[in-house]
Length: 393
Image (tube, rainbow, N blue to C red; front, top):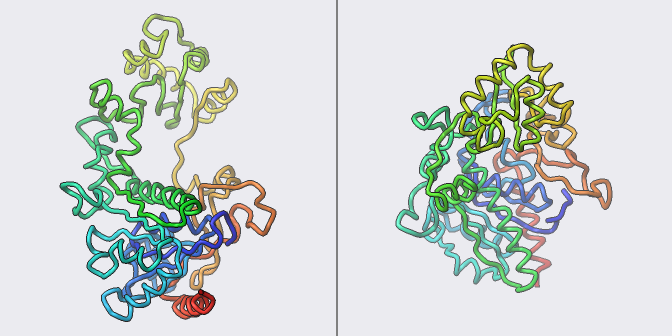
């Protein structure tokens, strides 16, 4: 692919989700990503659901590995370490998410990596940070969600903490890692040297606490799970109508007055006049709104809310999301040609750039490579490496 990172070589030593999600984002931006896998394969190749003639292809793996080449390397062997050293010399970025100290034990501490290639940008993703009293802990998404406070904010009530439905700690760590890499590459243009970028599953969650964090650090209030309604704005959440649920977000008094008029509620009564008043009487407000909403179905109310300019929406299932014209119009579904499955659709990249139809840059949703079979690019990468070395000074 062509893109803003065309010409950048990423050596991907990561596995599972956080690191691969990061390198997939870099690949979406045009970087040349070489995925180094143990001969047994990335562990996520064993995570279902499974598809294919022998039900051997993991849809989990497919989600995080488009736009990459796969080579198999035994990092515990001298031959494997020698190959990685050669790849390090020819790479711009190295991404790893081993436990703290593992890369050192394999013979590639940061100091040696920068001796081999001073321009190398190194991204290290850990569970709880590379140092500190618990820096060596293994990190898994749900554990991090709990430890970092996210589960205490999620669920129907403070007594029922829920995990977020997607592996959000892993995915956010990948996103944060990708923007750290891009920043370090930009800095390298000025300094001529690479640096180490570090993030963690813990940091990825604490880093998006936002107003929940300041509620405690500034106001001394401990936020708790509040179900499907906003913790400081009312009305803002999911409401039941005649045939199911819709979401309504009245984030200011003007929007509230429009909602109130639709539902035949007096917006100026003292208990509803301001957001503070509405939030203090939130349960009463929800009950009164749902009594009015019960008169019609979702389609009716969504059309009416749209007509008056109040943010609202349906609650879609995953299949409905991927069938939605708006999702497809944004390039959020891409078609790739898999070597076994043939043409398949994958969730697409979240970024779009202007001038997509110029300079050979693929338009949104086009030009992506399918996630690779295990080791499918061994020969091609070795040939590429030999050619790079031949041309290197």
